[in-house]
Length: 334
Image 1 (spheres, rainbow, N blue to C red):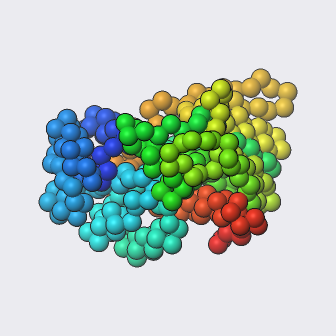
Image 2: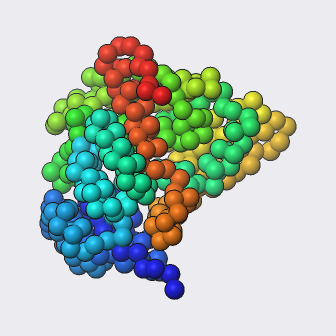
């Protein structure tokens, strides 16, 4: 009989609400604990989905002794939660971006490696059928040029929308390129391989009279890859009229056009009608099923992105910020 996986959550906000419904419907999965700095938020999740509520992560992990833990925190709040899992040998899933501080994240990655701990990072687009097909194709016919990014409207922070209060502060979110476009950066890494250099220019001063706002209005980023390919990626949070998520990948014999959050895909080949591959609407469930299988069996193979892998994506996004601030090309650690 399959082992029941006991799951706990550190962070009981919006991302927990994205993962919990699918996990709750899975056989042999039990939700045993919810933790949040706002205890009432954790209690509301526990009342609805089962388990106990806590305001202290360590106390929760010691009390409910989960088989794994979901760390679902804003960028600036990472660190202690992951180390609490490492210290107790508890496999953990961490949502993107995995941190705001590269050195802290690197230290966590080292501790995870020393323990040989199973981890998964929330780059769910790696699990999409179209992304997997593109990766296989591009291994034989590498991408020459990639372009894409995210365009959204002007932020509108308010006490009623607490997520946006931290999102518009660079010290907390890292800005849109670090917090949102990290998904696109990770897909590009997954498809094109490792990057060597990053350069960026920022647009500032267009968004006015937004309380607490100090992030870039837009960021234009160029990435050079070890295989010689290049990418132009962008973020923009200043246009209320039109926007969305885009990614175009151009290789010698094939081109991929991804559109929208679901990454609906068109595949172009010379003298052929474009093939269409719809994006999966239940991608969180697919991602979570892979992590549950890895936890249940102890085999990390189903996991598409580990903590250590996600650290490389974080480095690129933070390097883009550094390049824009310093006015120079940033060489990555390799």
